[in-house]
Length: 61
Ligand SMILES: [Zn+2]
Image 1 (cartoon, rainbow, N blue to C red):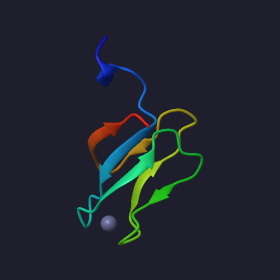
Image 2 (cartoon, protein in one colour; image 1 turned 90 degrees about the vertical axis):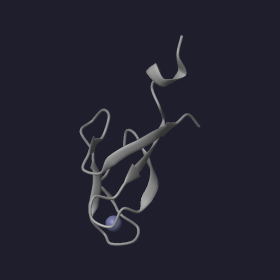
Image 3 (cartoon, helix red, strand yellow; image 1 turned 60 degrees about the horizontal axis):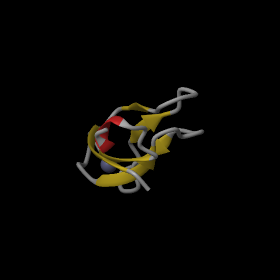
């Protein structure tokens, strides 16, 4: 049972505009904006977030 296949509570996402990496909840209730430039990095879908940035890795809190 590989850990990478399970649901990951948090994701490290790279901002598509400024390449800053930040940790976001994988099931956000609201749009997640980059802390540096304000670009949208993840949007809520009711389930797993739709990412605009690149998923760098999962973080199982
Ligand atoms: Zn940014």
